[in-house]
Image (cartoon, rainbow, N blue to C red; front, side, top):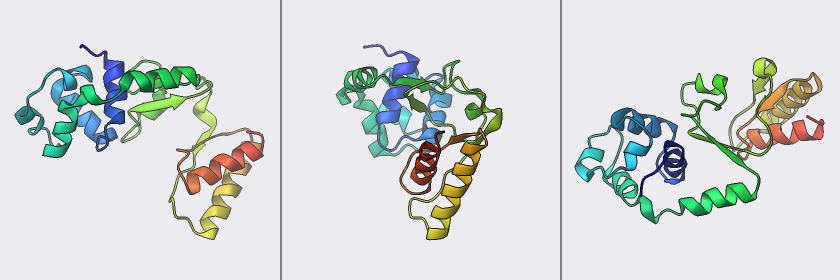
Length: 168
């Protein structure tokens, strides 16, 4: 079974232990996202910096991962998956040190990001952190700015909720 680069990115995103940096290292070593899964030998995977025996085995066992289910679930939910190696991936996001391999987006990302702010932080926040995340996110939203968060627990979730509550 041959994978497209897009599907290979989604697959890497589904493998526990492969984050943005390891995915970039693998793609750099093998030449493309799909080449990571084109029958590399265990010994070759172990030559890639940061790839352990356990992670190499997960990559070799990729056919056991339910990629089709993931893609079908995203489609059913009306979610578009953008991968870092596609032209329509947000250009400003490509410029950060370790951009996410995949973005799962419901809605549009065709916004003017020149007036945007990222609000991210600890999952275990202080009361001051909570108050500041809420204040900054709410104020930015009222001023017409786009607030971007990772939607993780903690500061990210507070920022997201503050924007939604402010009508942003």
